[in-house]
Amino acid sequence: MDDAGIIEFADEARRFCAFVEQASELPLDVRLVVARERLAALYVAALTLPEGAPAEADTPEVAERPAVDVGRFHLYRLVFDPYDWLDTPGAITHPPEPVLGDLGDDLTEIDRDLRRGLAVIDRDGPAAACWEWRFAFETHWGDHALGALRALHAAISRA
Image (cartoon, rainbow, N blue to C red):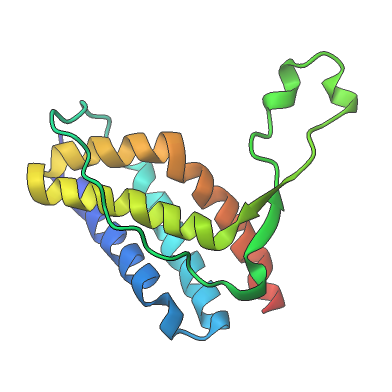
C-alpha cells in the first residue's frame, strides 16, 4: 500500500479539521467559500485512498464539537438517495420528496470522522487510518460532503 497517498489525505484532513475548529473566526461569506474549497479538496483526495483491511483495534472516540455556524444557510433541501425510487412500482410518476439537510451538521460530522482517522494514524499508522477513512467515506461522510458541496455552492451566490 502506498503510504504517500494516505499521508496526503491526512494532510488534507488536518486542513479541513483546522478550518472547522477556526471557522467561527471568519466572516460568514469567507467561511462559506473556504468550507467549499476545503471540502472539495478533501473529497477529491478521498477518491484516491486505496482499499485496505480493517484495523485490529477499536476506532477511537473523539470529542464532539459544536456545529459549524453557517448562518441562515444551515438548512437546505436534498434528495438523500437519488435512485431509491427506481425499484418501487409506479415510482416514475412519484419521485421522492426532498428532505432537509443541515449544512453545519454536515461539516461537523465530516470533521468527526476525519478526526477519528487522524487518531488512528497517530496510534496505528497509515494503513489502519486509510481503512478507517475509506470506510467512513463510503458509508457516511461522502454523502454529507456531496450534500454540503451543493448547498455551499448555492449559498455562496446568496451570501
